[in-house]
Amino acid sequence: MPLPQIADQSVMGYVRHLKNERRASDHTINSYILDIFQFAKISKDLNLEEKSLDWDKVSTTVAKDYIANLQEAKLSKSSILRKTSTMRSFFKFLLREKISSSNPFTELKGAKKERNLPQVMTINDVDKLLNAPLKYWAELYAKEPAKRQASGQFIARRDAAVLEVIYSGGLRISEAVNLTVNNLNILSGTMKILGKGSKQRICMLGAPAIRAIKAYLKFRENFTSSTTSSSTPLFINLKNGEQLNPRSLQRNFKHYLTYAGLSPELTPHKLRHSFATHLLEAGADLRSVQEMLGHSSLSTTQIYTHITPERLLEVYSKAHPHA
Image (cartoon, rainbow, N blue to C red; front, side, top):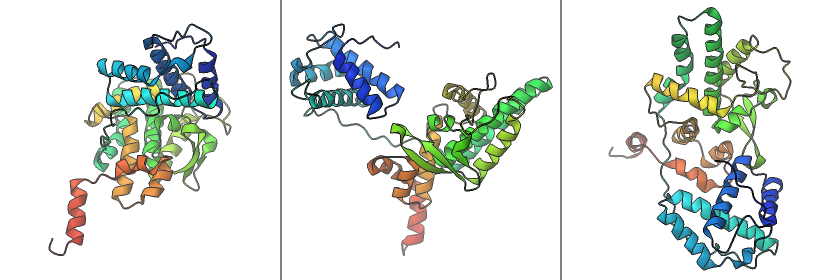
């Protein structure tokens, strides 16, 4: 969906605030712009084609009508909460800049967001998935000419390394594809990650991830003529040698799920969920997992503290005197 053209100076100021002060990503900023545009479109008192809107006209009643409109459109609770949060943040900025005299969204209580447990893969399923790229491409190109087979091996080793890195460090897919050669420290088994809000953190590289990266880098030398520097993207596309596009990985990911006999509803982000859950189930403390995930709030990490029936039985058998 193309972004709407916004003439209002207050909205433009808010966009600059998001970029410069909050260091928000382009994706987040675009979502905020669309939410604000939608609100102004629904509100009869506002017209985003004007260069200067009177945001002070927006009352709590107008804000309530907006939420009611979203509910009538049968949006999910999480979508309504997100859009309400956008408008609350926007008016907080307007209030700070003395563009509006109040924040009509401050006292509104949206529907409580359902805290669904994240979908988590078993360790066995993770192993199946991480082994899938090499087997999938080997079978797919088995009868192809040698050059095509080599291309398949490149993609296989690259994707195997990406997935190992995501699971090893609990990375978001964007964090994995944004890695540069300079971000890795193979000797210490760590990688420097630039996460949401431009926050840096250190994540771990396990032995399987290190092996996968080394195998990929050795193979990559035959497919790129460019000089490797500290800022060179770690994971590149086969065609142009540029940074791997997340969508390319997501497309291949679907093939790997089918090949491994896993649920098609799984996504690369489920590897991050599984990373956190597997650590906590093995006894890792919540604060450490919070740091590794890059969560600013401990409550966000606590959703991973759900316990499987198998783990409950194990704890009970070891701890209860009459088990």
